[in-house]
Length: 424
Image 1 (tube, helix red, strand yellow):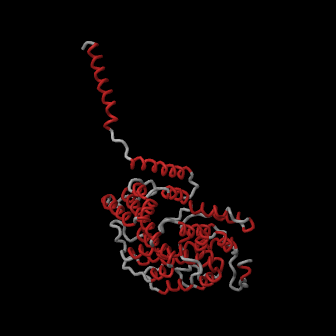
Image 2 (tube, one colour):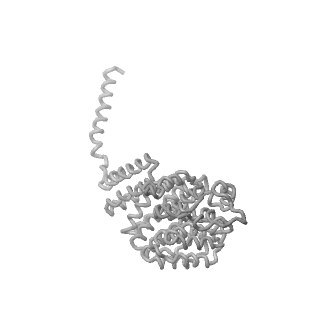
Image 3 (tube, one colour):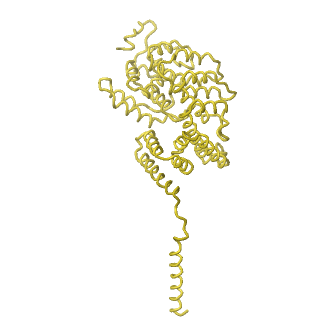
């Protein structure tokens, strides 16, 4: 082909391309106002997420607080828009904010999303942990939990009445395990804010053919997060223990950590006395031990942590008044108890990171004369693991290591006085 023909063809192609380019803007769909609004909000959320990821020492609470501030600045229409289009670790707060003004709409949206992704959710438990099925199930859980939180915050009594007898039927894919137990925990927590007597009566009278102890323990955990100070803790713990439970250890764990933590905060002397006299092995692992310090350390370490998450100065005054409580196992128990109070889910394993950071931030504000450095050292040295939860391991540790803390008293030796055990 002659060269001038080639040049002519090239010029023709370029001309066509230029014409298409000029016409393209007229044919392209411009972003709608909703899309523009969504993009702006998404950038704000991404910036908050990136900032949190760049500062691993920051607790999750700081990120959550930033996200809440973003959502509080949005209109109702924008909240609906974001909830249905953006995940980014904010689905829970999105549906929580939506349910505050439209609970029925928020729950319908979650249910529709769940039904749409039912096939993927069915994969949960069929493969490796953390697969797409588990991820989608967790995503749906966070959406449901957010909606229930928002509803129960603004109308706790109606939310409770609407859900309490469903036994998990709110969701098609979330069975009655730690997921649905968390729903009951949140509902009871907000009910206790407005009517603590009713909240306790609801949990003490709750009956279910399946997972009764798990649900009651979760309800108790929610109640204890919100119940006011000055409750008759002795009466309530006795009422809980009077019922016959098939698997009482679920409840014993919540009593040993959360209820005893609340009781210690209100009246440490009465709580200690009741606990030390208790012969329920599932509740007091060390009730046969003749060393008071060891009983307190092994039995009430997590209760002290629960108290510390609510009031570190008060809890630390109590903790440091005992001899021999500096062992790392006690620090781990403290982290666990604080985690029970601070955690977003009952089932989270003790990770220690955000919980430790939260407690350390409080410890840094303690007066020097209260033993600030000693408190910080205990929290920094604590090993966040679950070994202390095993009474056999704990008893073995005690017998092997307590010689270094304080020598075991011989049977014929003079018993320690109260002032020796607990110096003023």
